Amino acid sequence: MKPLQKQSRRDFLRIAAAALFGGAAWWIARRRSPRMVWQIDPEKCTQCGRCATHCVLPVSAVKCFHSYSMCGYCDLCGGYLRPDAHGRNTGAENQLCPTAAIRRKFIEDPYYQYTIDEKLCIGCGKCVKGCGLFGNGSLYLQVKHDLCVNCSECAIARACPSDAFKLVPASDPYLLKSNQEERIS
Amino acid sequence: MSKVKTVLSWFFVILLVMTSAWVFLNRNRRAEPGKNYIYSTEEFQQVDPALIHYVEVEPLVPSFGNPSSLAIAPVGQIYVGGPNCVEVFPDGEKIQVPATPTCLAVDDDGILFAGFQDYILVFSKERKSMLCLSPSKKAYLTSIAVDEKWIYAADAGNRRVWRYNKEGGNPIEIGAKDEVKGVRGFYVPSPFFDLDIAVDGSVWVVNPGYHALENYSSEGRLISSWEKAGFNIDGFSGCCNPAHFALMPDGSFVTAEKGLPRVKIHNPDGSLRCVVAGPDQFDADVTGLDVAADLQGKIYVLDPGRGKIRIFEKKKK
Image: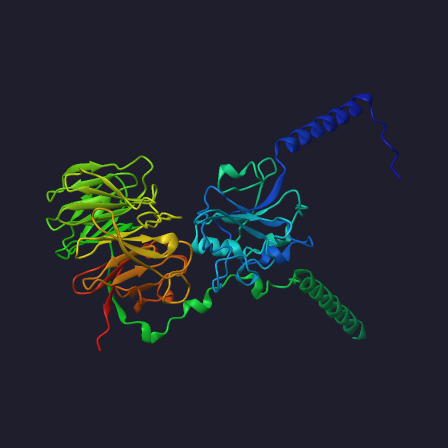
């Protein structure tokens, strides 16, 4: 057996200083690289429906957002009414949303305002597709960061067929279509 | 020998376990979304072949990409607008313009009217800019039509039609809400707002939010209208359709829709006459199909997705 070598005080100080500088450099680097969170790029999203079914949460953290400044406030809203709707009213048989998460409110003839009930929204994107096809594209999907648990490998991102999920800095976690929505989100 | 067998057996057992684990871990254990979660217009994509009375022929391909506007001159030349340019077919003439025109019109004398977002430039036959009209700073011009006396411009920004004389003077507004005169006002949720002049000198204007076509006299009096909303083939779908239309020599309407891209012909009373091209003849996400018709009844469709002017002729019996 090899006898243990005795360390001098100078060796000990060298090792301690190296550990101290290394630790400080790691801490600064960690502070400088921002924390990242998952978000959906609305331009890439194809509303495949997987956001509703693939999130690890019981009800998806993906919700529909509404850009009021882009909305046409249409009576015949492609995001609210089914393509084969029998009437332009709030009848359940006419509503496109499978959970009735969109509220329709009369403003003045012929304008209607549409709001999203976040508790009911499951993030399927059905309304987003209808709005994008026939309207101005004011409805779109976003990950709500007060609900998201931010898994390191997001289950929806893995299943997303259009590569619409991306990591964004936690300090700026939404990809909004209009600046006017920042207050709401 | 038996030792080799044992090693091989263990090797295959370990390989099987690892493969199973890999398959299990990579398997998608979540159900795919059912049909209730998927938006589908599939049932409206199908068009009865008996309704399609037109056949596509060789298209016109402009020398630039992203064509934005289309007009047919009374003498039959086809004007196509694109980035900083208007190209004339079949002459091959190229007219430089300061931006991308959103709409075009040509009169009997060959004078070109090019609409940009908030102004109209008028070019002489020698292609010199001779007049600039600017209805309002908020204007978003989407269509122009001209006859011997008047210039009409559809302004989606102000939800108005502006009428000028040929010198650019005497402007009046058409379409302001006036319940006493039965004018409900134009409802334009998105910048698709088209107009055309009828043979009697009146002007037909799309009221896209109501899925309607409205006929106004040159003084702005509402004469008549018809409307038909719905996804079925005889109606107009979505929140703002028809996106574009053109009048045919017999007074019928060639209409182009967005969302469910299709080109149809409606009789002067609004009933469906036939289909020119169904949704399966266009790219699914195409928006902004513009249409024009010549005196021989040929239909020209500006397809921005494919960057072409597609031409449809009536099928021979």
